[in-house]
Image 1 (tube, chains in turn brown, red):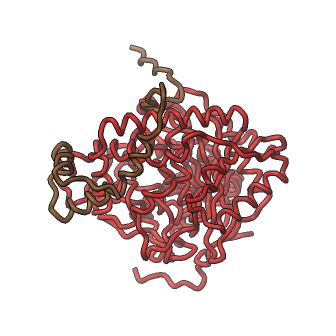
Image 2 (cartoon, one colour; image 1 turned 90 degrees about the horizontal axis):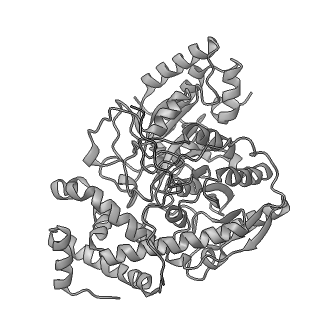
Image 3 (tube, chains in turn purple, orange; image 1 turned 60 degrees about the vertical axis):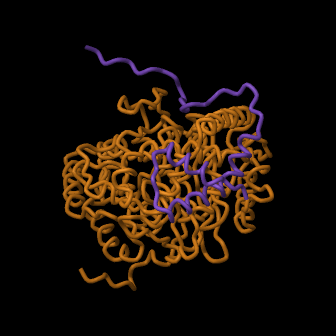
Length: 68
Length: 474
């Protein structure tokens, strides 16, 4: 399993504005470490010149402004 | 004549139109069933008997005066408790919203009201539509097929109420399968329309770019009737499409000869996916049925599809954290632990993670677009297995596993779940059919053809018959 250093994890929490009790912090760290292999798999793919999807807009037709 | 709760929306609607059925009588039937059964199923978090009867009386007067509005006039419905209802508490099943009373209806709710439907109450769900059955506000809904099992997530009350005969139709929301999963686990029908087809206005969000509102019912035809009422442009929703709404009933009963059905077996039946043998057998039988009906079933490949769940989780939890950030700081104790932990993950993902997930989303969307140029629909199981038991259920394991529904939230494509069999333990199994953008008509047509050829949707759980059940003391 991937292991995240305590300092690195605390940096992530601070950056997110999260201040957690020790028990909750430990549980979240374990969950994050469990999830890291999936994140690594996501980054392992060469997406070439694929752009971001952003928000999926089925039809980019702007709404007409209301008549005055 | 069969019992009133046995009628489909189509059947009851036609009887109301011909004045052979009273909306008041129909509504009373469901209110009595809720009283008799819901202490076991726990599908309802808010019951509205007085206003429902008042609405039913008003509908009856209108029909008798000749002002019949259509097939939903006088039909008793109930909606997931994240759709805003004017003057009726809407909680998203969280203490955070315990006292929240909206001042207007969600657009989808308003459209169903305009169609003349009756609101029986609000239905249970997972807290803010994520995490697990444990919530901070109400008890979880239970699966009518076996009360020890979960009814699916997150529109749990919608699936449970339909399966137990406690309403005739429902609105659910679907961010990763939350309409289709409870439909699958409870043996009913649930449709996630194309992104932009049904307004999200007035729906408590989980993840703006992945959330969809969708109808649930006991038959495909009833689902189409509900979709017809709620589909269409809404200026209040910035992602609402102006694409014209099709007549979903027009092609519903056409045969499916020549329809091409693609099966992404490389994903849904891959080693490690975890699709259990009973589910696989039931779904493969369903493919054979579609083939016997004249469809051409073939395997298709969508590149990188196995990375859809992680792309989904990064995007959805990042968006969810953004929505909840302020309340996390001011009232963290009002969230259930499972929810908080899961959504906190969204704060730990980096901008680089999110951009990579969005690029993956684009790749998967392009992959489906390519496939759907060669086939008309894609078919696969809805869930990897029938409904698990409450005891020992680990929502984080679900998050770590494969999702067969989330790819259609990432891509925005319409997808439906219909019953296609039962496990040896008597739990329903769902078949998922997805189609091209705004082509709900073909998805519904294939699903309806399958339903006409099979009888899975006609099976009822033992709890359906209330004769032997005593009402709880009130």
